[in-house]
Length: 252
Image (cartoon, rainbow, N blue to C red; front, side, top):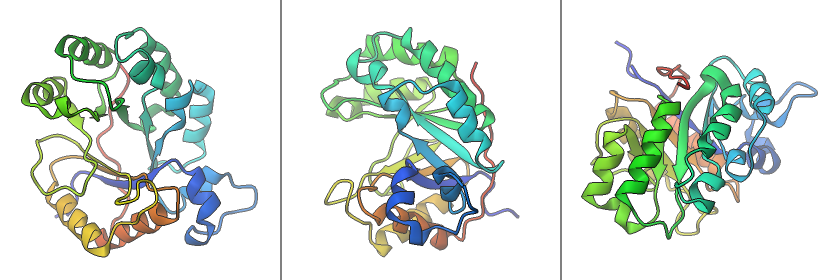
């Protein structure tokens, strides 16, 4: 019986840091290979953060898709115009965002909606936003709110009603609602720099093995040092993971 009937994907928040800081950890690449192609020699998944800062051309996304193996997948971070500047209220901006990332085609695995720390939960605004998002995209969507009000029952229920999973920013303790798992680890105690211990990564591997009912994504965002690459490769070893293709969804 297949031990992983649904996929586990392990990668980094962006590939540039891995290539620039950790070349010795990555496989040798053929002459003329792009940074993404070298990254894809070690990992089968990456979170694109560029889409947070600017609207990327669909042709650029299509090139990224073409530069990676067939089984490689991407998640994309929602543009800050949507999440931070207009604070979820201008849902028309979703059209441009999804047009640009459509270039990834079937390699688009998840959409990450990260919210600003001071954005409190507003049921009317959040409900309107996630309804609008779901009209445009029926795949894996996850949300990383950073205001305490989003941890309350009503906020969690609203996310669940729209099929949106909360992002896990700590090593999971096993208590989690059904649905896709998206673990996004920023490094602790020093954010973006600190490495996770072998004990923590083994605990994470056990958790991931137990969640066979859903697709599981792990993003290491402690990329300001070599910690992210080292942690991701170590977690791969603990799982003895072989890349598999998860159930795909598409833009509506």
